[in-house]
Image (cartoon, rainbow, N blue to C red; front, side, top):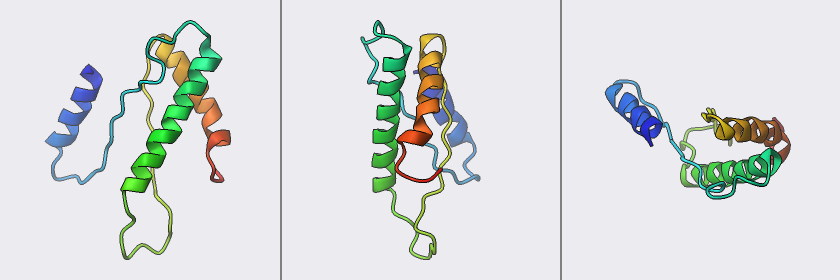
Length: 101
């Protein structure tokens, strides 16, 4: 919660720099930390795909856009077990996405 608040404050402070930063706090692994890093990472990548898909669906492309693609960047922050889940999820992300990456 602290990091989420800090990011939102930093973005708000840079009003002259237009940005579309979305912060998501994961939920899929809550109370599910005893079945291993692979399972936790797999749940996390599923949540990432669900979240990214929902964000892309709710953000239309500009009318003058010639390419029918969204340009996105993903940053992941995790510490301790969450960091291990994040690393594992990131290793699965390219093969899980339905686009050539």
